Amino acid sequence: MDPELELRQAIERLYELFSRCGKPSYMQEACGGDVSETDPVGILSKPLRELTPVDLRTYVLSAISTFGTVSDYKYFLPRVYDIATSGPKHWADTPIILSKLAYGKWLSWPSAEQEAIRNFLRAWWRDTLSRYHPPVQVDDLLDGLAQCEEVDGYLCIMQEMCANELSARRHLAVLTYSFSFSPLRQDIWDCFPWWSEHPRQLRSLLSWLFDEATARFLDKQYIDPDLERELGGASWPSAEMLLVAVDRYRRRRRACRDRVSQLPLPDV
Image 1 (cartoon, helix red, strand yellow):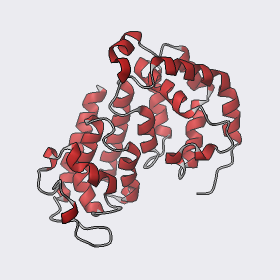
Image 2 (cartoon, helix red, strand yellow; image 1 turned 45 degrees about the vertical axis):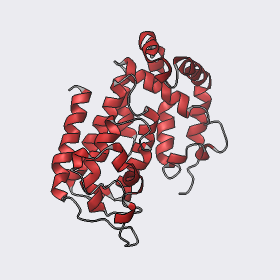
Image 3 (tube, one colour; image 1 turned 90 degrees about the vertical axis):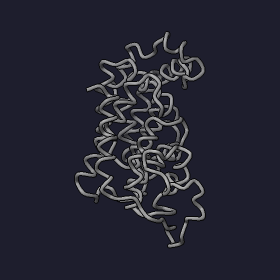
Image 4 (cartoon, rainbow, N blue to C red; image 1 turned 60 degrees about the vertical axis):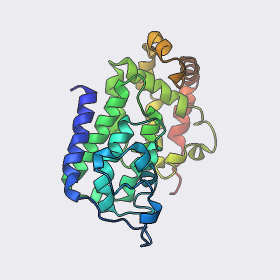
């Protein structure tokens, strides 16, 4: 199935399933206070699908932890994810958005809800890897996935797509840019703030990234010069930055792999 269509269908399934939660009539702060006066954008006054990124930005950053309940969040969840996958860049940090799942203990939700969310996350990942220049940077999405899911399955998807898709290999090059600069440092666990509570997952990611089988994908073409020219300054990291990062990755890969394999996991 086309990744974009798969993602759209997964989002529509979220709308369908979580519509059963019903729209909240009011929202409270976590400490019990009424937040209606601190909600100037009026997220309770509009139909769900009409809520804009501006309307929801304050809510998405503080849902459950600051105000509203898990039930409230379930109502807004489809629209939040709809905007996150297609809305403006830098709308809200993807790790914060997805951390709300863990905060709301989503693995204790009904099995149909868990399945729909997991299908959405995988569809979002595949759609991102299939786009040369997606709305959300691949390392940001991976940071977010680590907040709510085991990442091994997502790395397997990436490995499968790297075999055949140039866009996926470009995203692999982006990961060498984002993750391969620090494994030789003594304070490696401090270099990845979004992974500080997930060191086992980080070690799995770095072990996969520095594995020889993964490295072989970068022997194939991973930059499209024509697309890079079309994107101009919108392409980040730039082609030049990726070429430097991959060269450094190749020179340091074995040392980084050995270093990661010997790292003791910190207590969290």
